Structures are given as C-alpha cells and as structure tokens.
Image (cartoon, rainbow, N blue to C red; front, side, top):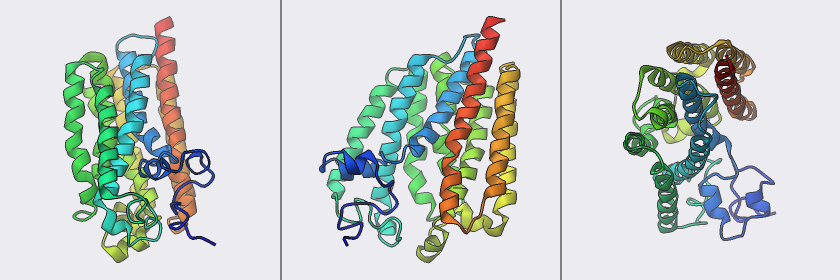
Length: 314
C-alpha cells in the first residue's frame, strides 16, 4: 500500500474531498497548499468580516449588511487564507518535515518546489489585492496594514508561548474591515468586536493546537495549548467569556436590539458546550470542536442580520 507521501496525499487533509477526487492532478498540490479541502480556515477568517458588516448595518439603520461587501469579503477570505497557508508552509517547511501530521504536505514531501509555492503565493495575493481595491481608500490602507501581522505570525511559535494571540490579531482583522468598508473610518464598537474576535481566536486555536502538543514539544514549537496544559478549560472559560462580554459591548455601542443579544447568548451556550465536551488528550475530538466554531459564526451572524431586519421594520 502506498503511503500518503507517495500517493501524493496529505496526512491531515480531508479524505474524499473534491481536491482528491475531481481536481486535475497538476492542481492538487496547490489546492493542498491553500487548504481548499478545509474550508473551516476561510470561514474563521470570514466571520469577523461578516459580523462587522452586519454590525455596521445596524449602526447605519439598514435592513442588513451590504450584500456586495459580503461577497467581496468571502472571495478575499478564501484568497488570503490560502495565501496565508502557503506562506506559513514556506516558513515552516523545516518544522513540518519533523511532524508526522504535516510531513506529507506539498513542500516537505516535494510535491511542489519552493519557487512554485512562491509563485502561487503571489497569485493569491493578487486576488486579495483586487478584492481590497473595491473598497474605499481608508479600508484599502487598513487592509494593507494587516499584512504586517500576517507576516510575523508564522515566526511567533518559535519565540513566544502565545502564537495564538498573533493569529487572533490577523484572523480578527476583518472585524475592523467590515466597519471601515461601510463608513470609511473606525469607531469603538468595531474595535470592541475586534478585541472579542482575538480572544475567540485564541480559544479555538488552543483547542486545535492540542492535536500537536506532543510533536510540538519534541521540535520546540510553542503554543497556548502547551502553556495552559491541564488548565486549558479554565483558560478557555476566561477567553470565551471575555469574547462574549466584548461582543455584547459592541452591540451596546450600536444600540442593537434583542435579536442580536440573543445571538450572543446562544453563541455563549455553544462555547460552553465546547468547554464541557473538550478532552485535550483526544485529537479527533479537539478537531471536531475546533471545526464547530463555524456554527458559532453562523449563530452570531444570524442574530445580527435578524436584528437589523427587525429594526428596519420598526
């Protein structure tokens, strides 16, 4: 039987996905670089954008977020998440080669060369730039500023126990972008949403990082999963609790109604469920709970959109 590397597959990729079954052979290594078979990544990048657009809709007295902005943010999230994964794999090739779950990825396994990966990275960045240029000048500059955080993130696992904080700074940037795209400026409700997104991201990525904690310890990679250890559940309670308070504060800032707060309350119940169910020594369960944050995103977004619709009718 061929192993994953020989077969051109990736050990931690989703089995039976269209990347493996329908994509042309030449495209598959690039699709795996961008993690197209794992949409959870771009959903997690997209949610702060959509939340912010919906929050701006409530603040502006509209019946919902701008649909054009939602579409642009989706395209941008897919492109930039893929670019981020490609960049991360370029930076982490030496580490990925030492970890069982990642050594069959396209770069360490030799499915693509570093030059090919860099070219693919540029193509994805160009798509992201094309999307960004559809917004107002303030939003364009704000989007460009996010690249500084994105650039340093892959190196943080080598120097700090808090790489998840830097992931939060990058992945939650959309909480600023949605508001900036609508108003051409930033106001404190968007900043509160951003800070809440950072805490949420640290929480869910801590759960994700528990999958690799043993390999990470061997190769010297740091993470909040290793830092928190057996105190992970209390830490998650603090992180998710703080995120909920900040999200509620953002809603107060735009004079949101009951539907939006109901979304936050139901979302909190989902986060509590994650904490209760978590077994930090069960990698499969950690992955499932991490992926469940897509549901959390939908819950908050639905509450915001419903609230905007109700307020527009009153």
